[in-house]
Image 1 (cartoon, rainbow, N blue to C red):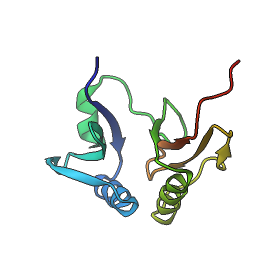
Image 2 (cartoon, rainbow, N blue to C red; image 1 turned 90 degrees about the horizontal axis):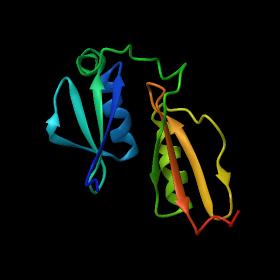
Image 3 (cartoon, rainbow, N blue to C red; image 1 turned 30 degrees about the vertical axis):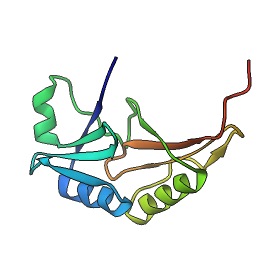
Image 4 (tube, rainbow, N blue to C red; image 1 turned 90 degrees about the vertical axis):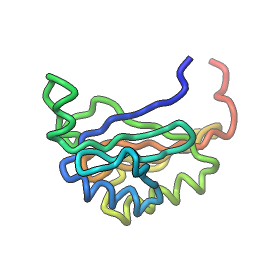
Length: 134
């Protein structure tokens, strides 16, 4: 079916957003990065396009919402371990992000998340097994 995913996120200050995610440990593809947008590599065939507000507006006739006051969705990424979840959240907090809620341990799944400088919600999870049958 699908071979890649590109999540597009408007950013008020593209340079600050790039620095934030670099502090967490993410890298950017220089072929898809300029003063209008930055192609952040999240994993194999997984990308987030951080877009300057003016540039993001060229892709839609709808208003861009302030992610600090409204939620239209959030990005959820899998991690190799609960420790990786905690390390990435700690790095995000140290770089200026916020934690919208405490970590949650559901036994089969551990998760925690952060909001970036623009308020976009990033959830990180480690799956330990399958959820119990309903």
